[in-house]
Image (spheres, rainbow, N blue to C red):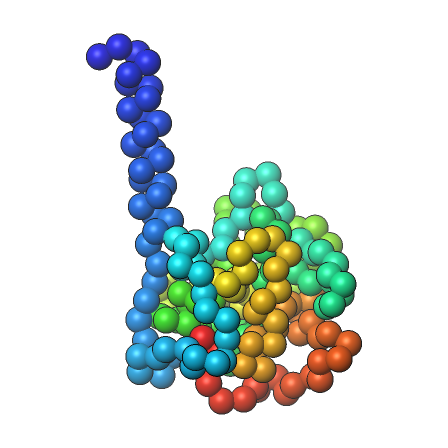
Length: 196
């Protein structure tokens, strides 16, 4: 086989494998063990792109966590690709525990730790750690709070997950909940439902 043909075949095989991995998402039941579907009016529908169920991982050479300033929420945390990261009021920070699994994690993919979680920009490294999820993967935490992306955020800088069900909030650089000037704070225990 000519050298150029072998190279083209290797590149095509690599792209096909990457597409297959990206298309895989997690599904299952809610943390209570019951299948769950989002209420029709509770949240924007998640896009049907392959990235919806793909966990957030930093690109090499980019910070694992960084900050950006939005006009409506102030300074929030993003992943290395600029996608807003959120915290879930049904999780716990002490001890760190993620309660978003199955269907929830398809809509709210966990921000998984890459090879180097020390890649930070605008965030105190003492506040960054990981928690082991039920599937064995390592999820980034900020001041104890597990971090997630929102599947409906289609581009860097989107904050469509802010305030969903009153229990999902963009994370601040200290792990707090970002709040719009006109948005009232809600208790850390949140309301009913899981917001997915």
